[in-house]
Length: 419
Ligand code: SF4
Image (cartoon, rainbow, N blue to C red):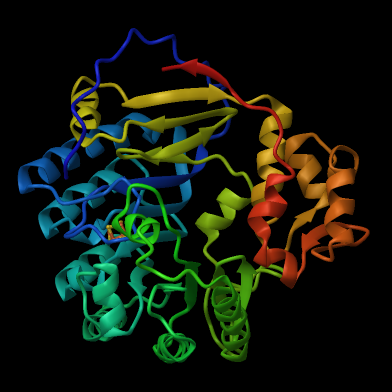
């Protein structure tokens, strides 16, 4: 990975006083390494030599120890990057640390995997330490499109990985797919969707290709080398919503679909409420509902008791700071309560359930019906939303434009408290 040179750190303002409270019950860990950088990817991730990965593991152990006294996670999510790129010994170090410091008893523990890096040994190790959900970055099951995206795995590796994970005892798998990929026809999308559903996955996350600045795909788009067809993208999204529903999935967020519990199925995951299926990702629901969460690893963001902060997107600097015994924070800011409430309103509207008025008020102290009455009416007039006695939620059309709808609910900027 080509990190920027280590920035000179200015004297830091005193860290914001995080008020005492019950331990935070959500934990995210960013593993910033990948075998190869995909054409479309703007995440902080990339290739790195073995000694850098080893140094990162040491720093992560330190960071886990630092946050452990204030964290009792119900959900854990290792994302990236490619967490499955860590070797067996590195995983063993991380997993035993998680248990030693009291972070290893989550009800839902997800690890993201690339199908090229799933092995029977690794799957068994993760499962035996309490990891119970695997999220696989598949993106497509069409070989030509996998090449086009710069993915390192083949379609066969996807099928093999699912078999390996099932044999290791994983009964909760997610598959990530992308649509509106340059060169992807509706036929190809239908085939990929059908094959993914036939794999028996419990969850699908499906994203439209985004042309992020500083990615090869963005440069190709700027140079006019790719056709961007918004109508086709809309049709693909509609096909996704319909086909997944036919296969027993329920959409519970703009891009996320979970399988409902089948009659007679004995899983420890009841359908939570009308709009949230049994196999929804509880960790991500926490984000959309504004739950506090620690974020560890380079570039990871966190939100803890009114303070939002982010680690440096620089692995060398991250390691250096942790080796000195302190967390590697690039910035921290406290949002005014109305600003945080606006963010929570915006995120929550991404869910099909929308916001129950009572829950929103209990979490933020603000009433959607008072503070955002104008915006809610506007969305209803556009035909994007519905309002009941108890809820406000986007409808099928509104969810397609959830980003624009959500933006209307944002309020004031935060106040920087340390850099
Ligand atoms: S594997 Fe994921 S994180 Fe890594 S480069 Fe590709 S899209 Fe980005």
